[in-house]
Image (tube, rainbow, N blue to C red; front, side):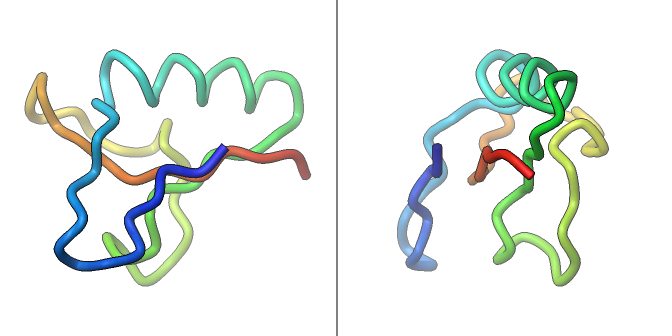
Length: 66
């Protein structure tokens, strides 16, 4: 699954706290990976390593198997 944020004008649609983190927890527990949109940081970061500083924080995300 991939949240398409290929353009700087495209807004991330999925909320970190309610949609991204719960799915990331399940996927990483099963051996997969969850990575935050590379436009947000220069190094790959797991969704579970992000700090939640806003209840409505939205992020681009990529889930997958390893």
